[in-house]
Length: 239
Image (cartoon, rainbow, N blue to C red; front, side, top):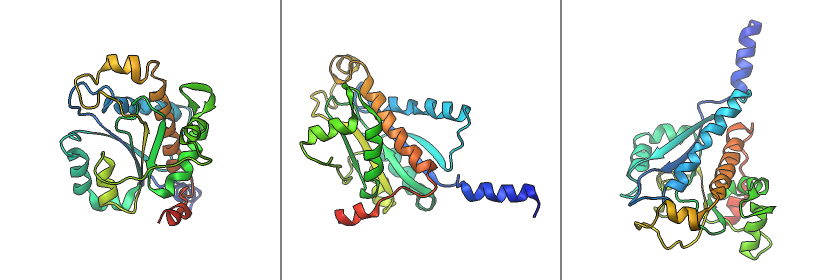
C-alpha cells in the first residue's frame, strides 16, 4: 500500500459522508404563515452559518441535508411521500431528523424528542443565551418555566408535523422538534402575519436566532462526534 492510499483509507475511516443528519421545515401555510411555518422556515438560514464554517476549514464527518417540505398542512404530504419513496435508503443512512415547524409562538422554550437525544438537547440549551434575558441561558429559563429541578422534554407522536413520517416509518431512528411554545391566538388565521410577529411573537427576532442556534449545535454534534452521542439509558427509563 502506498502512502497516498494509506492516507485515503485513514480519511474514509474517520468520515462517513453517506450518513445523513436531516434538518427540515415545511413552507406551505394556510394564510400568511408568519408563525406557522415561516418562523421555522427562517431558521433554514442556518445554511449560511454552515457555509461560513466550511470557509474556515470545517469538514463535517457526516452529511447535513436541509429539507423544505411542501403540503404539510394538507396531511404531511411532502415529507411523507419522500420518506415512503426513499424508505430503504433513509433507514440505512439517516442518523437523525431534526424538525422545526412553528418554533416562535411567544412562550417559553420547549423540545420534544426520542429519549436518546435528551442529553445533547440539554447540553445545547446550556450553551445558548436566553433571547429574553441575557443574564441566563435557555436551559436556565426552561428549568424555571417547568418549576422543577430538571427540564422535561416532550415525546413525539401522532401526526403533528413533518417528523411523523420519520418516527412512524423509520423507527427506531432519532428525531426532535424545537419550539418557543404558547397557545397563540392567531393560529391558522389571517392574522398570523408579520405585524403579529413583530409586535407580539418575537419583536426583536431573537427567539428565531436562539432556535436556529440550538438546532445547529445539536446537528453539529450528530454530524461530527466520532461516536454518536446517544444515551439509551434515557430510552430505557422512558420505557
